[in-house]
Length: 492
Ligand code: AHR
Image 1 (cartoon, protein in one colour):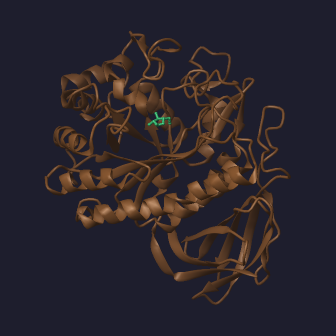
Image 2: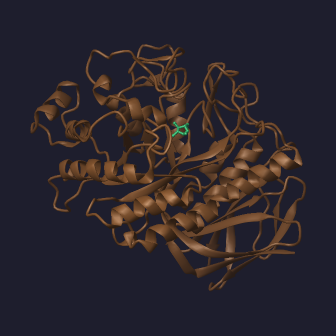
Image 3: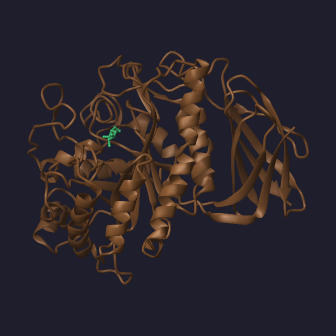
């Protein structure tokens, strides 16, 4: 029989809540036609954002929300998004035709959304087509104390006297691609320029010195040469850096409903590959001694499954919008288990994206806001946030494939989360907790469905959602094929 062993005395690290972070870009239906309906809409809203979506997101306890892109950030002029007059611009994603950017959602509106859902903001600064001075001014506008600089007075005139609390600032996005097609060396020089200015202006008048964490734009997936180039340049300079990102997407070839053996294995194997990427990027950064500057350096600020477009409720009208099936829930669980097990290396992660897009939490379907299966996994896993990640040993029988993580908080409450990665075989596992006298089961939930291609729609919003599961101390745990299980244990 499969065996899961939780080594309770062996704490890997506290799980930064930010590992459960989200991403929202001005692309497709994320904001317009999605979260944003406007203050005058008939749809109940909170400061212009759909009240149902806000409530659902708030329930996840989202720690952080990244904005305004993505690629969009690299042609974004922050001044377009403040004040009464909002210029209409081309959007990075629709250079020739398609949707224009109305700038209805700008800095103040984004902060309204963050405050409504309870997330900390993470802004991505334009490095490709703006200057360090633009970044400086945006920071001045957002962070300067009330009544100090001219830009802080402009902020006050626009409705916000007190500074915004924006702890995370990203320096560029995908600068190896859409963000300027730069080489690692070129980007590193740009980073050093921007970061020096941004760090200087961000020093808040607080006794603890710096007010913000700057995040360097990192590699595409497994491009370790980028991480080496950037790390070597950062190590050779005094440029401030609080974290280094990389992006990791799974897919593109198979349709989101393709559950053939090839598609299933390819998606699961590629998703599982993020573990090696975490280990290797981290090792390179440590190798350059940068862990002294950034002890938990990794920021995986875009991750998720990426299928060919058109499967979402808008049938292709919203760029990159895709349906989300049981397999996406399993991949969410697999990924979050990996992040938990490597909590000593990861400062933040942001699933892409929050609504009507790639690996999303919510889909607006015929006017209704529907939670995806992946949303439910974030909900089942939320008690991992801020808990201590525990060492877990997993010994699987031939053919079985379980992904596991465990964490402890509140002095003896353990959350064990397990994904059965097999679409064909149910699994049973014996559970051992080392280093404790015994344990009881407080609760157990499982998310699965008759068909791994099942998804949630306006007509069937709860087709794939968690239900209570049977679990008892001392008895084997049961994991249906293609499922996600969360068991809360209380140690004695
Ligand atoms: O998430 C969609 C896009 O994917 C982002 O804008 C970009 O950073 C990535 O390539």
